[in-house]
Image (cartoon, rainbow, N blue to C red; front, side):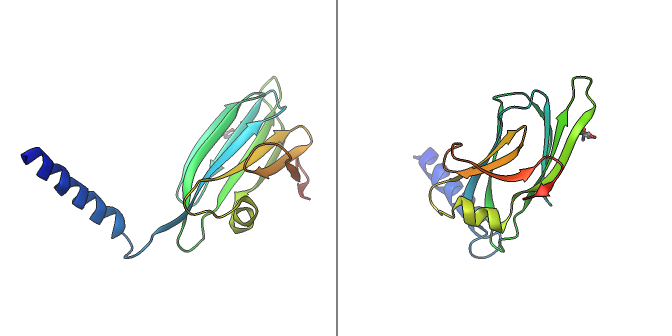
Length: 149
Ligand SMILES: *[C@@H]1O[C@H](CO)[C@@H](O)[C@H](O)[C@H]1NC(C)=O
């Protein structure tokens, strides 16, 4: 019985902490972003936002890297990605930075509130393909070294 009251008390504490941070709602749609290496032998990916730095990830063909987040209430959530196409001697062959998540990407990826919105960036030798839901049928959005297309 005492354990039961303890559990109820803890649930109340957790609920009040998680719901009172900004008064009402403090986060919106849930997203999982996937970076899939679809053809670069030696790729380094660096994802970062104003609040988070996910560090350098070294990838090879067929590797997937993903992270989860919720869009904030002000819809200012943005993640930027630096992509380095490395040569076998670890020198940078091509390098590009672009927004992997912002409001425009959110529009394209979907804004479901209950189920997680899945967004994919496929990294290929000719550029970066974006798709939602599943990694197929991506659309070429950025090229290596030539910025937005
Ligand atoms: C990430 O990798 C790139 C490319 O090699 C390099 O220029 C950069 O300094 C690295 N960043 C960190 C934090 O290691």
